Each structure stands twice: as structure tokens, then as C-alpha cells.
Image (cartoon, rainbow, N blue to C red; front, side, top):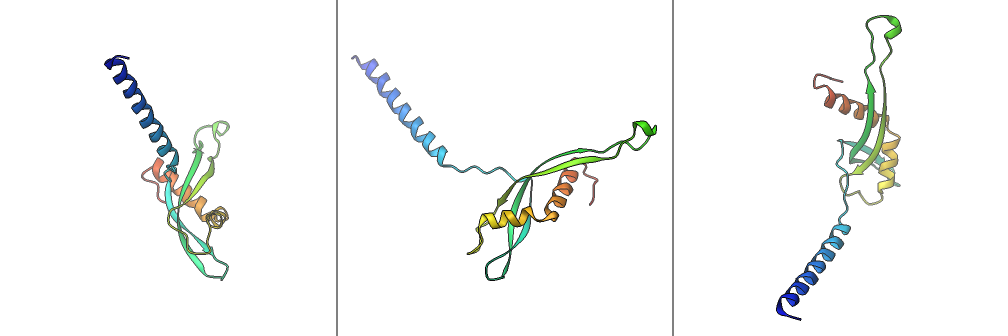
Length: 130
């Protein structure tokens, strides 16, 4: 093996090792989606103490504002659909509070869906005020 082939083989071995270590490091990184907005949810622990937990909410929304003018046969009411796709716990939980408890409390809270609609409309129309 001449010096050029040896150098090329060594370079390839080093490059493969670097790629392997980089891939392993990236696999360990936990990626969370960026929430659409942040709010709080209240969770009660086993002792009856209520905690305010900061959460991020991700949602998918569709909205049709409807048509209210013109011939009645061409008019239709507004309609929309709001799906809360993920709840992210943004801070460390107090002792006795789990992420599942926080997500369950958020799922049972109509206020979060209302806030999601407010966020959706504020992003779509800067003049919208709930």
C-alpha cells in the first residue's frame, strides 16, 4: 500500500468514526415540538394541594368564516375544528405530580381549547380581540 492509499484509507476510517459518533449523539437528543402558545393548568396532588403548572399547547385548526351576505342559498354559517395535538410540560413538576396528571388535567380543561381558538384567530387576524 502506497502512502496515498494509506492516507485515503485512514481519512475514510476517521470520517466514518466521526459520523458514527455524531449520529449516536443526535439520537440521544430529545426534540420537542415548539408550542403554539403557553398557558397554565391546575393540578391537584394526592394531598389535596393545587399546583399551577406551566404548559405549552400545540394545535391544528381549520376555520371557515362562512358567508352571511348575498342570496340566502349562497350563505352558510362559520365552522371550524380545533384539535389539541400535544401538551408539553415546560417546567419540572413538583413531587407527586406526573406529566400524565398534567396532560389529563389539560385535556379536561375547556379553557385551553378556548385559548387555542383565541391564539389561532389572533395569528390569522391581528385585529381580532376575544
